[in-house]
Amino acid sequence: MTIAEVASENDDQSSKKPKVVVIGAGTCGLRAAEVLIQAGCEVKVLEARDRVGGRIATTSKLGLPLDLGANWIHGNVGNPIIEIAEKAGSSYSIDELDDTVVFTPDGSLLPKRLGDEVVTKMWDYFDEGITYSAQNMTTIQPNISFMEYYKERVQAEGWDEKRSAYQIQVADLLGSIVATEIKKQDFRNLHMEEPIPGENLFLSSTYGPVMDLMAKTVLKNECLELNTPVEQVETLQTADGPVHSIYTKDGEVHTANAVLCAIPLGSLKQDRIKFDPPIPEKIRQSIKHLGYGSLEKTYITFPKAFWMDGPSYFIFLADSTVSERKTMAAISLAHIAPPYNQPTLLFYTHGETSKQITDILQMSTPEEARTKILTFFHPYISKLPNYSVENPDCTPLDYTSTNWLNDEYAGNGSYTNFPVGLVDGIEDVKTIEAGVPEQRLWFCGEHTAPLLGLASVSGAYWAGEIAAKRCLEAFGMAGGEEVVPA
Ligand SMILES: Cc1cc2nc3c(=O)[nH]c(=O)nc-3n(C[C@H](O)[C@H](O)[C@H](O)COP(=O)(O)OP(=O)(O)OC[C@H]3O[C@@H](n4cnc5c(N)ncnc54)[C@H](O)[C@@H]3O)c2cc1C
Image 1 (cartoon, rainbow, N blue to C red):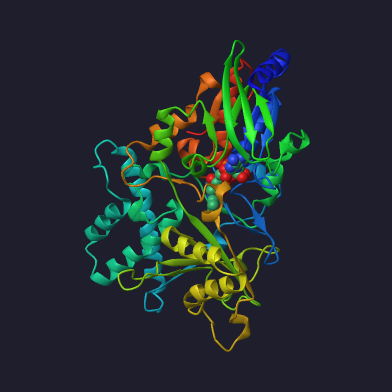
Image 2 (image 1 turned 90 degrees about the horizontal axis):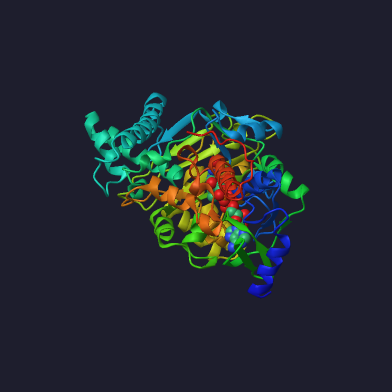
C-alpha cells in the first residue's frame, strides 16, 4: 500500500472510530487494548508470538502448570492484579514458603535463629536503602552501588569476621529482585525498586488463569493477530493528523491513527522495530540509560519431596572469593497447599549465573543440557534434609529451565533495572512514557509504570491504562478508568 493510499484510506475512515494498533499482547498491551476497546476505538493487537502473555507464560512439562515468567503478586494493597486473580479463582501461598534455613559455604547449617537474623537483616538493609535513597537522591554520590551501601551497613554492626561474611554472602539473593548482581545496582536510584505495599503472594495456581482473564476483551473482540512480528512503523502527518503504516515481518501493512508500542524495553534498546521518523533523541537516550536485567528460573522435579519434613526455603551461602558460584536459593513447591503442591524445587538465577545456565540451554543438545543443568544444581540438592545418593527419591526425574536471555521477543532479558551510573531513572521513565503525542505514538510496558509498579506485572497493567488514557485524550475521547497508584 502506498502512502497516498494509506492517507486516502484514513480519509475514508475519518468519520469513523479512531484506529489504534497496539504492538505486543503482554499484560500492558492487553490492558491498553481493553481500555481503548471499551472507550469505542477500533483496535488491532499485533503479537509476535503464537500466544498472549509475553513475560507471563506457563508450562506443564513437569506435570502441574508452572510459571516460567512472573509468579508473584508483589504487594496486595491497592494492586489491580489482586482483583483479577480473585475473579480467576486463584490460590496463593504466603507463609508456607517462609520457613527458611541457611547453609554456610562449607555446607553446614546455620543455627535457625542466626539464619533468620541474617535473612531479616538483608531485607532490612534493602528496605532502609530504598527509603534512604528516596530521601537523599540529590546528595548521594553518583556511581555508588547498592552493594557498597550494604557493606557499609554490615561494617557498622561491629560483628566478627564470620558473622559479617554471612551477611555479605546472603546479599547475592537480592540480585534476583533487581535482576542483576547488586554491585551493579545504582544506589541513588534504588528507591525505584520500592514495591507496592502489603504482602507478596505466590500464585500457587499460576498466572495462567489471570492471563486468560486479562486477554478476554481482546479475544472477544477478535482483534488479535498472533505470529505477527512488527518490523517498522512509518508515520505520515496529514491534514487530519498522523497516519501510521505498521509493517509486519510477513509483509502485511496495517494502518492506524495511533500506535501504542507495548514491546519490552530490551527490544526497544535493540531497535527491534524501526520508526520513521526515528524515535526522538531524548526518548532514545532514556531507553539507553535504563538497564534491562536477567532473571531465569529452573524447576527440578523428583519422585517424592524427600526434604518435606524440613523447611520450605533453602539458602546456600557461597563464598565468591573462593568459588565462581553465587549464593543460591531454592523454594519447595511441595510445601504449597494442595492441589498445587508438587515434589519440585524452584531455583532463581540472575546476572552471570543466569547467563551460565542459558548458555548451556543454547549450546547443548537437550540430553547434554539436562546432564549439565542437573550437575550444576546437584551441590545444592545434595545438601537438602534427608538427601542420600542411595535413595531413588533423591534423583531428579526431570527439569525445565527458562531462556529469557535468548528470547528476542522478551528483549533478551527479564525486566527493567537501574544500573550504576544512572543519573535520574524517574526522569527517564517519564520521558519514555510521555511518548511522541504529536505523532500519536506511545511506548508502554513495565518500564513505563508508575514508581511502585516498575518492572512488575501490576506496573505493566497500570502502564497499559496510562498509555490508553493518553491516546484517548489525544482523540478527545472519554474513557479509561482512573489510575490510582502513588
Ligand atoms: C523470570 C521472570 C520472573 C518474573 N517474576 C515476576 C513476578 O513474580 N512478579 C511480577 O510482578 N513480575 C515478574 N516478572 C516481570 C513481569 O513478568 C513483567 O514485568 C511483565 O510481565 C511485563 O509485561 P509487559 O506487557 O510490559 O511486557 P511483555 O509481557 O514482555 O509483553 C510484550 C509483548 O510484546 C511482544 N513483542 C515483542 N516484540 C514484538 C514485535 N516486534 N512485534 C509484535 N510483538 C512483539 C512480546 O512477544 C510480548 O508478548 C518476571 C519476569 C521474568 C522474566
